Image (cartoon, rainbow, N blue to C red; front, top):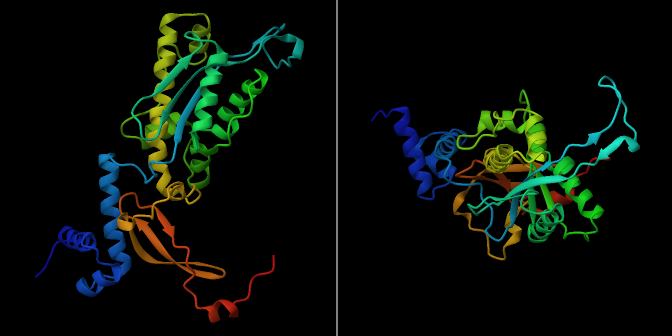
Amino acid sequence: MNLSEDEVKQRVVSLSEEGLSHRAIEAITGIPRSTVGDFISKRTYKEWWEQQDCLPSVESSVRMLFLDIETRQLTLEGFGLFNQNFSLDQIAEDWSILSFSAKWYDEEEVMYYDVTEMTEDDLLSILHNLFDEAHFIVAHNGRRFDLKKIRSRMIARGLPPHSPVRVIDTLEIAKREFSFTSNKLEYLTKLLCKRHQKSSHNKFPGFLLWREFVRGNPEAIQEMREYNIVDVTSLQELYEVLAPWSNSLPNFDVYTDDVLDMNDWEETGFVYTNLGKYTQYRNKVTGRYKRGRVNLLSKEKRASLLANIV
C-alpha cells in the first residue's frame, strides 16, 4: 500500500507515541532512524511553535523570575552639545531606578512598581525580597545591565547582599547561538514571538518617555507602565523560543527530589566526548537535546583511552 508523505509521518509519530524506540520504528517501517527522528521532532516542534501553549520543561520547584528595569537619566550641566566630557561636579542629579516589572515563570500576574507610587528605597526592598526567593533571574542584557544597576543602588542605599541568584541572559543566548540582524529585544520579539512583542512607546518616542515620566506627566507614567510590563511578557516568550536551542542552560531537574519523568524524552542515538559515550535524548515537545550521565564505554575501553595534552 502506497502512503503519502503525511501519512508516513503520522504513522511514525503514532508508533513513537506508543513508546517504540527509533530503532524499533526503523525495523517496522524501513525508514532510517535519522529520518524517523526528523519526522518526530519537526512535527512536534511545529505544533509547539504554532500553538505556543506549552513551555520548555522547568520543574515547578524552580523559582524563575523574569525581570526588566527602567532607570532615570543623568542630569548634567554643561556649556555645549558636541563632544562634551562631563566631570563629577557637573552631575546635577544622578541616575536611579524609576520602575521595574517582574513575573514568575509559572504565574500569570505581572508585578509592576514605579517611583510615582513609592520611593526608590521601597522598590529596592521589593527587588531584594524577590531576589532572595528566586533561583534564577531571566533578563535581556541582564548580566551587564539590570543586575549590576540594581545591585549598585542596593549597596548605595545600605541594603545587605541578597541571596545568591543565577542569571539567564537571553541576549547572551542570542549572541552565542545565532547571528541575527539585531540582538535588541524589540527586534528579536518582533521576529520570533507570536503573542507578545516589545512596545515602541509611540506616544512618547525615544528619550521623551523618560523625560515626561520624570516630570510627572500622567500619560507618560501610564505608557511607561505598559511599556515596562510588555517588556517582561515578551521577554518570557522570547526565552521560551530560544531555550530549546541553548546547550548552556542550567539543569533544572536538580531542583526537585523526584526522579525524572522520562515520558517527554526519547533516545536519539549517542553523544561522544573525548573520553566517553553517552545516550542522547531529545524532548518530544520542544526539540531540546540532553545526554545521559552514564558512560557506556566498558571499563577496559575507558582504561585504554589516552587523553589530549592541554
